[in-house]
Length: 219
Image 1 (cartoon, rainbow, N blue to C red):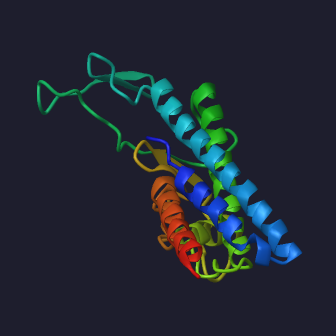
Image 2 (cartoon, one colour):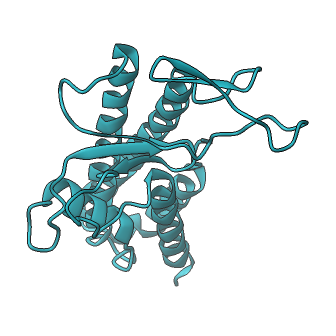
């Protein structure tokens, strides 16, 4: 998985602050400062998520070796190439599990997976906070990040609520989308499916960029 580029949205936000700062109330200036800090945190957490995902797949050997072999559950499996000249790719292979302190697995991988889940949850909490700050800043009230809101509210903070009901505690991730909150479902708990970290972060960045561009261009 490749890192996400936050440089454009951070540059746009700095231009936005320069454009509106003189007309901001003291509280708005303080909120703008918090939002700038949170964007930097989100950038760094996103990098950690990408790095952890890539590292786990390398350690777990879900990337086939030079002999087209992977290791699963202590077994080495030989994969067949569809094209003799192209190595086998397993970027879409999903690793998923129900959360439990004594779940089986190699300690090194379990530790990395626990870190990945913590970073993913930090990402959604931070991104959701940014959406709230934006609502109190001039010209940014239209900023919305639906995927972030659903994951944070329905899957993380209020899963037992009437608007959710997704209470089975699970986690999943793959090399294409990264972490997937509540990625394992049981008992017909199929509502509010998480599309994954990467598409959710891309929606967040795209919507915020569009909103900032409109605000900066306004007269």
